[in-house]
Length: 146
Image (cartoon, rainbow, N blue to C red; front, top):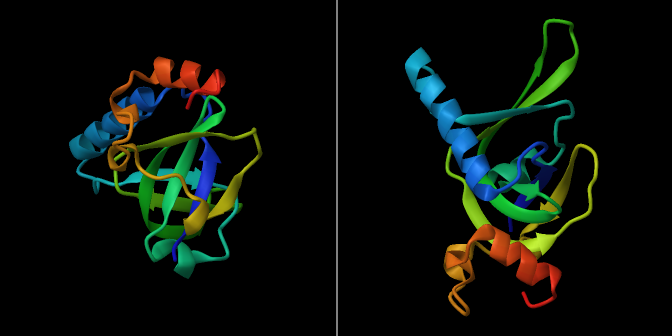
């Protein structure tokens, strides 16, 4: 079973905004002739790299809930210009909305096991939650109806 990472999407207000942000980064990368991968740089390097790369994703927390994910394809430790250790989290540039789940703020990233990861919204057909506008989903969740 894969292990996932979970991280706050600081400054992002919706899954649509995250998708737009990633699309803009891919457009810039394409213009520069760079590979079409979404890269997020973090300070710490995960210890469970093999487990993560065996099908894991980076789950994004947006406005207090786990809301989206991107599949991780590489984890690359490196040193920046100042000699400080950093890590590139390399992802497929496809943001996938997941079943929203409340999450309190935290610093850095955390591990999320495969059995506790929320399912993708497109796999949930029960109430067509995936077709709802994001603000409506948030309001229904806050009311305890989702």
